[in-house]
Image 1: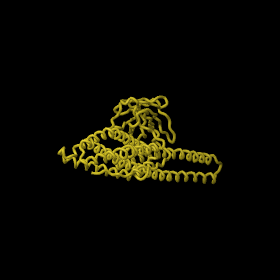
Image 2: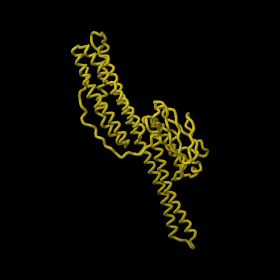
Image 3: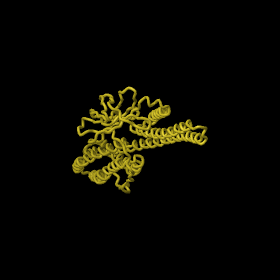
Length: 389
């Protein structure tokens, strides 16, 4: 039986980057039985947007919300389950001639970690007439096809797919504005050429240069968008990898800490008088398993923080994860759990069953609320990691 006695080398250093703007997709109201979603429905034009008034938005399984004259809407829903599989709401626009292009596939991911704020979402729809633009239509079709493939092959979360979708739609629209300006110049040159009394070589050469510039810009834009998709894909795949690793390790630690607490509560079973030799093996294995995950987190937690800081670029997320490690190391393990186990082990070595039992009961009462606090902190960290992109 043993419990490791070491201090992690240094306090982790937080590298705080500029926080990226992001939308919280859903949050609990002060009334825990209700969720409020509010936002705006806008129409995506070629490079610009406009509000869609009086638009009926269907939230599957919950009801319909109509937008006002400025495209704003709200709907109050029953609180959703803590099961992450039930944290997705499907939204559809019941307006003929329109289709939703953001969020991707109409899927809104819910944030249940905030008990005070309301969801603030933006829904973007495209009028089918706009899709008559062959270039625009082709780019949106290509984007949807690649995102579907990416989602199937890599099992990316709804939030990450939506982030890629929104970034690339914005990229397409920026280029469409540039393309529109270039087309206006080409049309103006054509008009000037038509009005010229004779063939104007300079105007014609200028026109050919503008046409060539447009063709080159289109090829360059497509290449840049391909590279952007690859970069975003790599970023979110790494996010998913680190999210999974951190989640597994922290939840494994939580399970092992609870196991230790349970053994401490029944430590009198360790002594010969209890005639329970199985408990001795269970107790020793429990401490061994706890130490294994403790060593891993102690060695890796600084890397976790650095990678989260880099790939999430959100001080809020980094600070919350750092706070979780602080609860684990500075509130639970070193000041409480480690010395308590050392004391209990001393009672076991000196065969003081009564003192071990009494101390074990006191330890349980003292550590139980700290472990509950750690559990809440882990849950909050995981929610932020999953939602803040």
